[in-house]
Length: 156
Image (cartoon, rainbow, N blue to C red; front, top):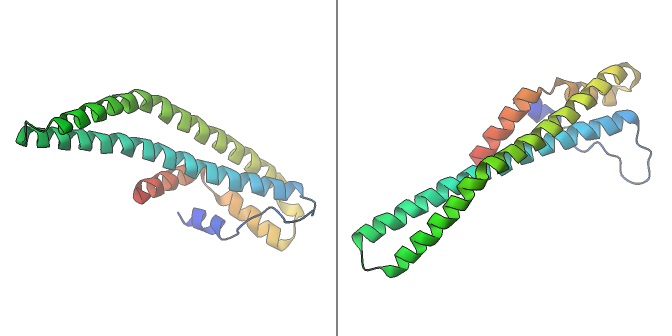
């Protein structure tokens, strides 16, 4: 978790204006983008799972209220609509999770590629850039995924 926090303190790596972007800056930007995409995919998957959990709870709540008030036809309609929506989300949840896993895997591949290129260039940079490169290289893909997933669940 400290690795993720340390990386975030370096801020944006893409220069503003028309300044040329070095190969190192481009690779640092790839690391930053990959980190954002990993976080986004974790959050999107957590939201999809929580959506299903929320719909299940709503259906259970409607059915419980119907049991108390059998004459409430509007509750029957609401429960039927919620059950149909729940069935649709449950059907598509595996596909959405697979899509998010593919997004994460592509971001992890870009992260690994950028880190490999940065390792090769580490010695040729100034001190400030070298610190940013070292922070980028210290990122553990496994830790990044785990922290992103934990943060996504915590935010929901």
